[in-house]
Image (tube, rainbow, N blue to C red; front, side, top):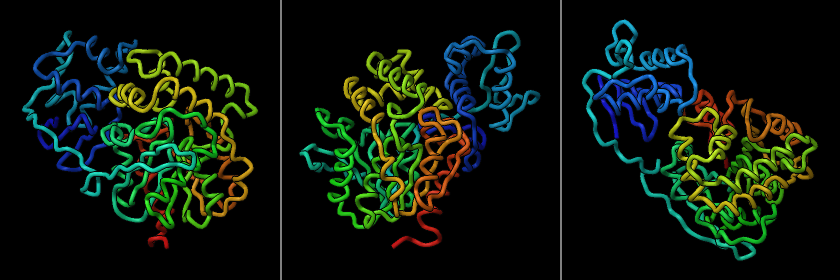
Length: 396
């Protein structure tokens, strides 16, 4: 649905707010507040209702509420004196006033203008791996990682913006890793070598020659291992939020304990609405996510894999080790890491950049393991990836 008022248009599903067609940057909580007021504009919203909807019932100070109301007004050209759009009703709450037109938002097709192509191939051990291609331009392969589903991702408020943005400049090839999404779930072998063979199968099935390789999170060590095996195939290597040794192999006792705690939470709360695990998971992966993005984690977990597979995958990932390979990588490499990443500490990214010969390092300001459109880091991430890969001209 799309809400039109004055020069403004707001689309909740895509988390877009525009003014005269130009995008407006809005903090996630402020965006949620605007959506709630617009949806309930026929009545006065009490402070208690606002807290429940926007803050999920947490204890919030009056000053925090006032600050968010003020920020919402500023985002849509209003203020506390004019109250053109958001009116304060003394002792009762707030109401969105003024003329609002509600229309159905246009569907978001793939950036290439065509539907993505999904196909299946077989890895070296016979496992069926689902892969998809979309967009146009220089080929970019996104290494498989946890929590993907080739079809659902195109509607996900977490993954869809990332895919659309990449498909503007690249022919994007991505796949669901074994045990995940549309690939085979009944898997016995989750070793790093098998994950690399899955990537090899996808690259060959997609008919790629030379391409850029993007590995994020657990996809980073998989991408490192592939680039080490096939330096002639990878023109550029981009590693985002990655690591060289999994959490259960590191020297830090704290990280090993955290790894075991995550496995326990997965076994008991995976894909369950309202479970403490969802909030804990969101705090780690997208602490600055909107309510919509956090709520979408339930469907993302439920559709991508089973609780048993999720725990098995997590345990396998936490034992990945490419520390013996990183010093031998000859491919031009860009290492990207968020300063306060709650999944992989910043030191992991710094270590990768230090050990890969000639690697560039990009520090993103933020806390999210998955960069989201509302963050200041969003344009920085894609601008630097494109600069690194194209460098003023398409790679050959």
